[in-house]
Length: 85
Image (cartoon, rainbow, N blue to C red; front, side):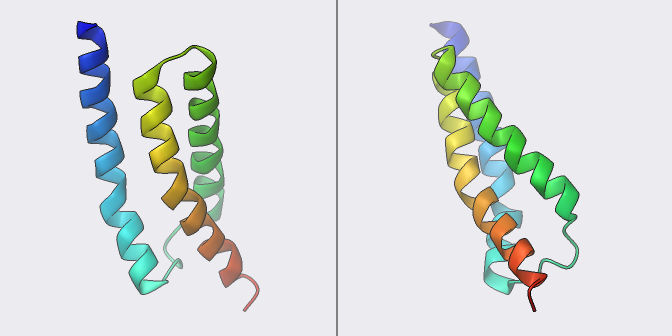
């Protein structure tokens, strides 16, 4: 149980650290400085970490990555849509 507390603290810190940049990108809609390759890999990694957390029943890993996956997919979508313009 104590290990889960550390896991939730780590998950909270890493998840919260992602949001300022994601929110800035969502507000500005400017994705020019974002590497498409990096964001594709990042989003896929977060999705796989979510799946891993679910499969091994690891709450901190599952919850943190599901929360991070939402804005990651949105920002990736913005990046991909910038190529259509």
